[in-house]
Amino acid sequence: MVQYNIVLIGFGGVNRALAQLVAERNDLWQSELGFRLNIVAVTDLNLGSVISQNGIDPRMLVETKFEKGGFARLSGGSAEADNEKVIRQAPAGIVAEATFTNPQNGEPAVSHCRWALESGKHVVTTNKGPVALAARELVALARRNNVHFEYEGAVMSGTPVIRLAKNTLSGAGLSAFQGVLNGTSNFVLGRMEAGLGFAQAVQEAQALGYAEADPTADVEGYDVRLKVVILANELLGAALKPSDVSCRGISSLTAADIQAAAKDGCRWKLIGSAARRKDGEIEASVAPRRLDLDHPLCAVNGATNAVSFTTDLLGAVTVTGPGAGRVETAYALLSDIIAIHRGSRGSLAKEAA
Ligand code: HSE
Image (cartoon, rainbow, N blue to C red; front, top):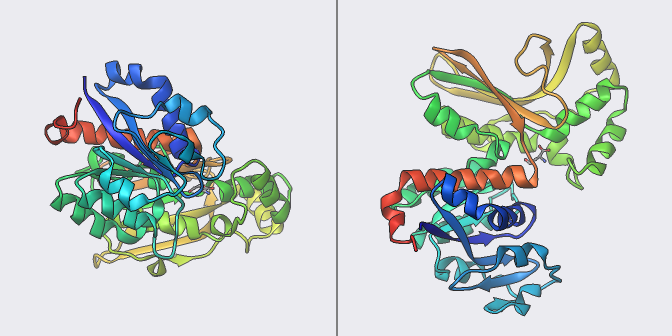
C-alpha cells in the first residue's frame, strides 16, 4: 500500500476540506489513484500545532470544535504554531500550504515553502503569494532538493489551468491568454446588469461569502493581477512582478456603463490578460473590457472563472469552472499530489508505508 504522509500548514477552509476528503475518500483514492493520505501534522496560527508519528484521525480533526490554542488538547499538540519546527521535523513527504495570501512579499507562506523544500519535502500550495512573488526561487530550490513545488490551485482553484496549458497544450504555440479570474467582481458585474448599484452588488457578494470582508483586492483587480503574474510567468516565460502589470478594477464602472453595453449587445468583464508581442516582450494588464456577445469570455456568469488561451494550432482554447471554494480548492491540492505521485514514484517510494 502506498501511503503519503502529509503536513497541513494553515487549518482554515481549504486544508479543513482536504482533511474532510481524506476522511471520506481514502479507500476510493487507494483503488482509483493508487495511494492513501495520512495527515501527520497540522499547524494553524489560531489553533496551534500537532504532530503525530502515526497519523491524526482526519474525522476528529474536522469534527472537533477547537478553541484558540485548542490543538494543545491533542496528543503531540501545542497551543503554539511553530511552523518551522513542524515543517522541518514532521515525518512527512508532502507539505500542503494553505495559509493567507500576502500580496506584498508572500510571507510567511514563502518561508513555509522554503523550509519544506530545503528539508526534502514536496510542496503543494493554493497560495498566490509565494507563486506570484517567489516562484523562480522556490522552483530552483525544489529542483536542487529533487522534490516538487506544485501550485495548480493558485489561479482557478481546482479548475485545471496551469498543468492543462503547460502539459496538455504544449506544442500548440500558446502566445496569449485572457481571463475572468475573480469570481467576486464577475458576480458584482452580473448583479449590476440586473439593475443593482455597485455598493449593493458588493454587499450581496459579501453576504454570499464570495467577497472578502474588505473586498478591495477583488474589485480593484489586485487579486487578478497576482493571477496574471502567475500565468504570464509560468506559461509565457515572463519574469513579471505585480508592479509590471497595469491594473484597473471595476469600481470605476457605473450602472449607466453597464446598461449602455447591454443595449449594444455587449457585457463588461474584468479581464486579466497577457500576450507575447512581436519583439518577444510580454505585455500584461488587468482592466474592465467591453466584450461582444460572441467573445469566449462573455457568457461567464456569476462567480465562475474562465481563461481563454490563444494558440497557433488550435486558435482559442477556453476553460471555465469554479475559481474559489473550500472543496474546489482542496481538490487542487489533491491534483498536485496526484502529479507528484505520477511524476516521482521512485523518490516517493521510500516514503510509502
Ligand atoms: N476572492 C477570490 C474571488 C477568490 O472572488 O475570485 C480567491 O482568489
